[in-house]
Image (cartoon, rainbow over all chains, first blue to last red; front, side):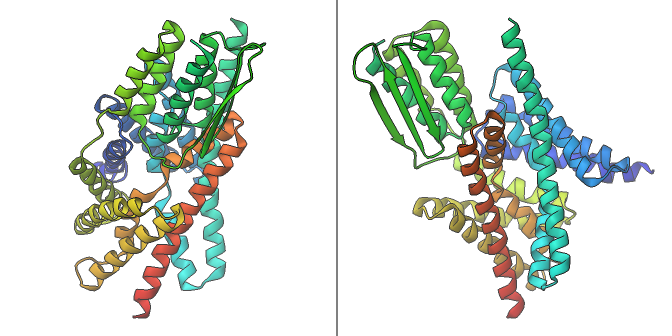
Length: 153
Length: 255
C-alpha cells in the first residue's frame, strides 16, 4: 500500500472523526477540557473500525467491535476523571452512524426497487443493531463487575 | 433536613437532570443516594422515586406522618452534558458533606446559570459537522462548502422550529425538507456534482445521538419504560429525517 493510500483511507477519516466529534461536543455543551478526550474517543472508534475493515472482517463485526471499543474507552475515562459515561459515549459513537447506508436505503425506496430496498433496509438495521450490541456488551460487563466489586467490599 | 426540604431538593435536582439529558438510571440513583445521606434509606423513613423522561414522582415517608408526594411534569428536554456533569458532582458533594438546604439551593442556582456556548460558536459547530461529514462520506471540497452553508441555515431553522414546538417527528421532517430541497436546488444550479453527499453531511446535525445513547443505557440499567420511550423518540426522529428528505427529492425529481 502506498503512503498516499494510507493517508487517504486511514489518516483522513480519523482526522475527520476527530474534528466532527469536537464540533458535536459544542452542540452537546461539553466544556473545552473534556473535548479533546472526547474527540480522541471518536478518532479511536474510527481507527478501530478501519483496522477491522482492512483485515477483511464482516462489516457487522466491524461495527460491533468499534462500538465496544469506544464504549470501553468512555467507561474507563469516566471512572478516571469522575464524569458521566454519556459525555464520551455519545460523542465517540457519532462517527459510526451509518449515514450513507441510511441515505441509500431511502433513495432506493424513492426509486421503487422494493427488493433492493428490503435488502439495504435489513443491512442498515443490522448495522444499528451491531452498534447497540457493542455498547450493550461492554456496559453490561462493566456493570456486572462493579456490582461484584461492591458486594465483595 | 426535614422531609419537606428533602422533597424540594430532590425533586429540583431530579427534574434538572432529566431536562439536561441524563439517563433515568442516574436520576433515580442520585435521588436515592441523597436521601440515604440524610437518613431516608429504609424502614419508617424512606423515599420512593419513579422517573420517566416526561415526569418525575417522588414520595417521602417520615415516621408516622402522612407521606409527602411531589410530581414534576417535564416538558422541555434538551442536551447539556456539562450541567449533568456538575449536577453529578453536586450530588456526590451532598452525599459526603450533608450541607444545609440553603447551600444546595445556591449550588443549584449556580448550575442553572452556567454559561452555554454562544450562538456564533454553535452555528460554527453545525457548519463544521456538516462539511466534515460531507468530506467523510466522500464528497469534494465544493460540496463540503455548500453543506456547511446549509448546516448554518439548518441551525436557524431548527431553533425557529424549536420555539413553535411541534412534535419531534414534525420537527425533524421540517428540518430535513429544508436541508434536502436546498441541496437539490444547489445541484440543479450546477454548483455541485450531486446532492447526495451534501444531504448526508448536513443531515448528520439532526441525528438524535443523545436519545439513542440514553435509550441503550436505560435498557442496560433495566428501566425498560424509559428505554422504550427514548427508543420510540429516536425512531420517530430518524423516520422523520428519511421522510422529509425523500419527499423533497421526489418532488424535485418530478419537477
